[in-house]
Length: 170
Image (cartoon, rainbow, N blue to C red; front, side, top):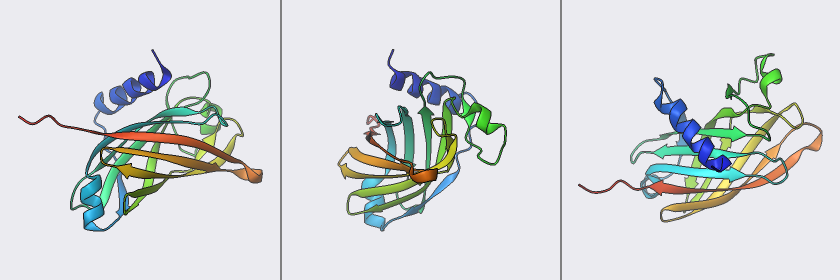
């Protein structure tokens, strides 16, 4: 089974197996752009530079100024899941483990999707990093790139893609 399939299963188990309460993500967009992006999006990401990959979900509801989204990041080797609480000294010990990260901001305009992830400790540099992503929507798919920045000039790039999960009509 592929790493992305395992990450998707892990995310589904994590989110479905407990009383998951997603944190609202500020959504900056015109009503028409929100309507065009409305739905549940599932995707994957990978970076040859960092070796990290994973999966994510993003839910956008028409007429709302918030969305809901999370990312499961898997570094090399894959270990038990851990939260990405950069304020916890214990987190540094666990940063090589898969992490569940929150999407903290999304902006949509004219088919362009931009956003940021919460800061987290990257396992390759043991430093706090920030990630910004950008992509282009084409109907039920979004394809894009992301950049992670950290201490001492760290800059890593990767690619991501997502598909809108379609709900069958009854």
